[in-house]
Image (tube, rainbow, N blue to C red; front, top):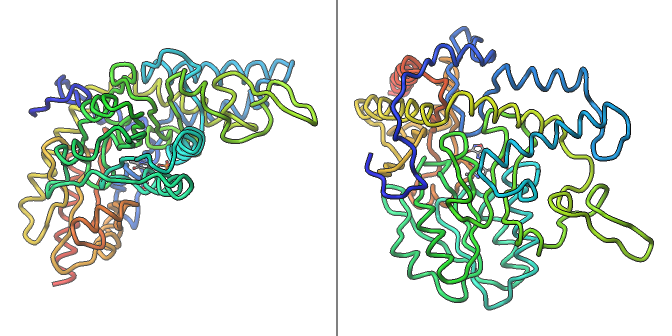
Length: 420
Ligand code: 7TS
């Protein structure tokens, strides 16, 4: 694969990937749905959890459960130590400079809203400009629309071409000295396009803009290095990374986070409170008001241990081979139209079938045990760009197999027979 952007350094290593051994770690995959073996191809929505993560959560609630940062008793100290150890794992995972740069939030959505409201609302003015892309998930669109309404700043977007790739020449035209924020997805959830984010970041910095990268779809598939990327903010959700729901990460450069006011007020984010005034805690606690999702953080730490042990590079290589196979098989199905054919893409097969609504495809596939997602994938502008209401989307993880892709194709054939 020809890939000029070092941030997209996905497919360099070839490895013998033992998928059966990996599958044995995921108990949910053993079940049957409608009397057929479950074929789980909805990983872009949420990934399944290995027993290593499930066991850590179970042990936490059985043996450690306690509130953090406040108790003097042993359980609280243990929970605090595990919570902060997980923060250190995240720091290493994305190669941040310090744990002060790792803020725990509910997910990618909350992280983007935090940056829009704490950073954006306090720095943007009516004449300023924000750039996003036509490829974004709604959670990287709507917070910027809200911010634009609040501040009067103008929201612009980088369009995509027919393959579902960002048109960088248009990006160049949008950038100017009024650009304050560029917010871009690392990998598209609707089409699987891998964006050239290093190039996007460097060009934004050249005009003095800050860059937020939405890495929700990227961290399960590629090694991310925020220091090398030099992004200002990077966000992701734990549940797509084989960890629990309700937990996510905001990475922000320390100086920027330091300059930003709190997003929410409450316990733990303060240094001192009087009836007249409060002062705030240091980073990252300033942004973690209230009792956090302690088990979620510890479970996310276990998920990071799991993917580190597995090796994201060899998993990505394996997933790439799966995608190539899926593409080949899909291209043999008459009436199947692929949506999103970027040169650099990963793990997502978005398609339509002539004369059959994607929701009907989803229902018939479910009857065959095949779980996909049908709809606009919270990326309605992408659907509008291709002039379609929805797609059927199969999204892969490293525990999927060629046999499962065969099952997908067989179920698609059945779907065609039912409707024709
Ligand atoms: N950004 C991208 C690129 C995403 O794919 C998603 C979720 C989000 C942000 C939001 O993540 P959350 O964890 O805060 O909800 N994407 C999808 C999807 O493709 N199908 O279901 C959720």
